Length: 240
Image (cartoon, rainbow, N blue to C red):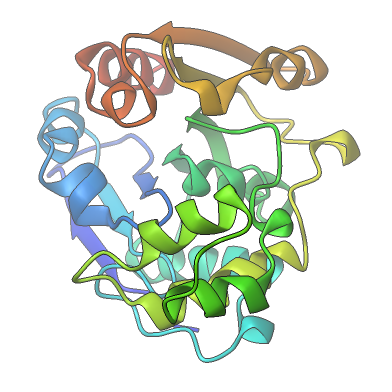
């Protein structure tokens, strides 16, 4: 699957490009391009490669859940990054779903040098969603499971590709997030909002990795991403 890439070069930069991966039911534009992240990274001398995940932003629709497994999406991310930055190391800043996927990148490619993982949940949310109930709720039924109702609300906002996102959920769930099986061995900074309930327990992931650290920033799940403290911590970490 071919993903849409937004590339913003920093002329004369000798540092690795930074790949940006957004959250679920969002886009590169919503999370990074319109929020000042690109300007801040380029001011720090970093070329930016922002990627729209499958069924998000300007990337193509998801054909079927079978095409949207975690390994397939990770491979597509690396292909997209290679199209914009064919050689050398890559640094990654990811958020929420982007972090869940970025967790797998160092094992899939030796090009990944450093990771910043923001808003990462220690649990796999998609495996708990019944696709049949989700389809029924999208058709107007009342949800029996609050999680299904929440997911249906997220993916049915006007302007989102609801059908693609509904396929992406079971696709990713077919290869669920399993941090107990190991994680990135490259230097990794975890970032959690002080009021973000989704990141509860992230300390156990940090403790299990050989080169990981954790910083807390102000805000809930959305506000943390937009906080200047997150941006400053990420840019400082990648510069090391």
